[in-house]
Each structure stands twice: as structure tokens, then as C-alpha cells.
Length: 343
Image (cartoon, rainbow, N blue to C red):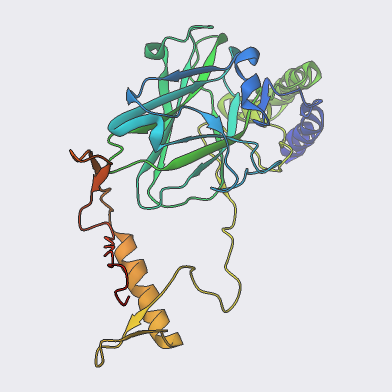
């Protein structure tokens, strides 16, 4: 019992010594102005085929605002990274960083979806400043066909044989923009160094082991395997980050922000018209009919959507420009009236 008390006291003192001063993050980017990223070591590589009209761009608040800070302070990409029907492979590489086991890559990610699958993959390369995409290894992937809202993610570095230098990378990937791809945003990217016990803590644990060895000669032998495990446990405890979430090896911490709720008594926006089955006339729906229409709309939106092909342009021989519309478009007809004819 005395041995247990001694060891518990030793761990308590060690725990008080392991939390050292917080080191500055190795990387901290809030994307207030993405025009400055290249000068700070970030690299843009759009391998989409065929290329579209956009690449990475400043966040658009009218689509959705940033996770924190100014409404446009995030980096975004959309289905126009590739031409219609093409494949998106749009890479965003961080600056070169010092890498070691236990470091964490933290970021906020939002996939809009709206019925079209959005996918973002996260990679790591330990090949120094190289931007060769073949040297990057996949760490994790996130996909959704519906709006995820902003989610906070944390990925830990592990498995390195020795400290190295390299880059993290984000890749927006869509296989066919005619049926998938919408809009995604990335915010608050940071890389934090691993928590390292102070020299005083290590010395304290070593002294504690020596003391326990002396006690074990006089009393009941101690299992050195158990002692070693407790010692290692004391050295792997990491300090709490600023958001209060403790990180552990091989754990992906996800904090989901609550989605905004519509005001009481309000339903989804948009124009609704109700056709009376008896008279065939259109009119404003009653609350019950409006609720039934909303349920039907939600049911139809739950399944996969097929994106219509771009309308075909025609140039009639008599001049002008025309557009060929299919049944998914709304046609309108204009009938000219002769002068003096009743309209």
C-alpha cells in the first residue's frame, strides 16, 4: 500500500511539471486574404481535366460565411474547377514544415453538397519542400452530398521513423462535374507541435523509478512492466489546447457546430402554388397543403440528383442566337400582335 501511495504522489508531482509553456503553432492561417498565400509558401496545383473557369478563391459570404472572423475569410473551391463533365483534382499545399510524431493538423471544413457529392482529401508528404504530388500519402477523406455546416477536424502525425520536413495538402476531388460537385470551404488551418515533457519531469520519473527500485529490494517485488507502463503513460499526456479538447495519438477529434434553425412558424422559402384537384385552378395553399408540399419536396430531394447538360446554342441563318431547351427548362412563347389588333 505504501508503494502505491509513493507512486501516486510521484505521478501527481510529475503531472504538475509536464505542462510547459505553450509553444507557438508551426502554422496558423485564417485565409483573410488568399492573395498573400503564395508569398508565404502555400502552393496551388489545379490538375482538373479539362480545367474549368475557377481554382481556389476567396470565400463567398453569400454562399456561406466563414467559420470565424470576417464573412469571406476562408478559402473555397467549386464545381467550376473543371469544365462541365470533367474531373476535379484541385490541390492546396501548405508551406514546408518541420514534422514529428504527435504534431496535429487542425482545420475547419464545410461541404455544401446540395444533392451533389463533394469530397475533400487530406495528405502528408515528408519530402521536404517538394511539390511532387506523387510523394503525398492520404491521411483522411471527407465527403457529403448535403450541407455539413462547419466541422472542426484534427489529424495527428504518427509513424515517422525520425523527424522530417514536408507539407500537408488538401485536395478537392470530383469524378464528374455533370453529376457531382458543388462548393467547399476550408478555414482556420493550424499545425501544432507535439507536447514534450520538460527535462525536470523526465528527471523526476527517473528518480522515482530508482526510488521504487530501492523499495522493491526491501519489500515485495514490483512488476517492472507495470512500472514502465505507468512511466510511459506519464510522458504521453498532452497539455489541453486552447479549445479545451485533449488530443491523443490515433484519434480524430471532430467538433460539430449546431446548424442554424429556422425561426418559429417559418417554413422553407420559395414560391408554392397549389392546384385544386377538383377545379384544376391554381391558388395559395392552406397551411396543411403547404406542409404536404414541403414533405414532397424533401422526399424528392433525398435521392441522388442528375445534373442536366448545358443547353446547346444555335445560330439561325437569318441571324440572332438561339438556345435548345429540354423538358427540364421552362419554355415561354411570345406572340406578336398586328397593329390595331386586340391584345
